[in-house]
Amino acid sequence: MAADDGRRSVFGDQAGSVEVLWGGRERPSRGPKPALSLERITRTAMALADAGGLGAVSMQRVAAELDFTKMSLYRYVPGKSELVALMIDTALGEPPAAAEPAASGRDGSGWRAALRTWAGALAAVYQRHPWLLETAVGPRVMGPHELGWTDRALAALAGTGLTGGERLDAVVVVTGHVRTLAQVSAPTGPGGARATRPEEAMSAALNELLAGRADRFPAVAAALADSGGASRDQAWEFGLERILDGLESYTDRARGGAS
Image (cartoon, rainbow, N blue to C red; front, side, top):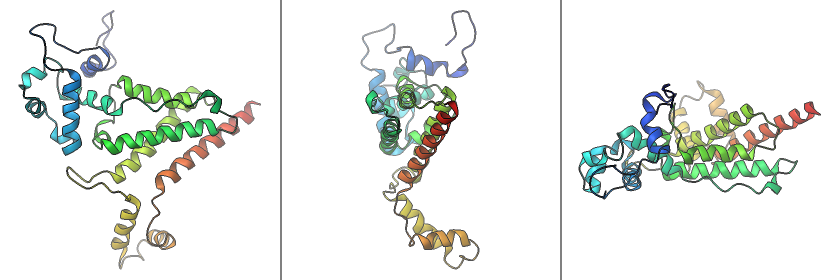
């Protein structure tokens, strides 16, 4: 989407995604009253991805599910990449409600609780739509919902004393932790089972691999032995709390230096 003065958009060949996400492209400008909508097309594509992964989504397949021709879809969305952009933003939906301002106390409990709630809600989205782990990566256009998630997390950190860049970095770190644990528990493929206890499954796999080989990997063997041979499936909570501990310690030092 070019600027008014003719300069190229920073989004380059992703300008079509800008239009469908932010430009209000909803219906063809000519022809009979449409029987389709972007919402219906997007929801149908999401259902296909939820059932069979992103590979199950194609313009032809979506059109068939809707009982329309593929050319009919192109009157609403330019192609699959733009459709995937819509799927991502629709799947994310609205972020969790903001914490009450009064909860942002000096002890850090307010922003910690807000970020913990935010991270848990994001993890739940990845659990409902595992294909997001494959699509919501790399340089791309963020939609209104996705940008709203970022805004909500940044708002939680507004009173911490972190700079704008530090707040952005903190959100990236928390998001990365959520994504990593979601990938561990994601189905192994279309129709694959989700690991309901991913750390326990990983421990079992490591124990099997180490059978007769413990001397080659002594640190792994020692850690497994110390854990009783099976993890307590707390990496998500443990990792998130240590990230929040680090942020709290950093903000405390920053306040001390400022005073």
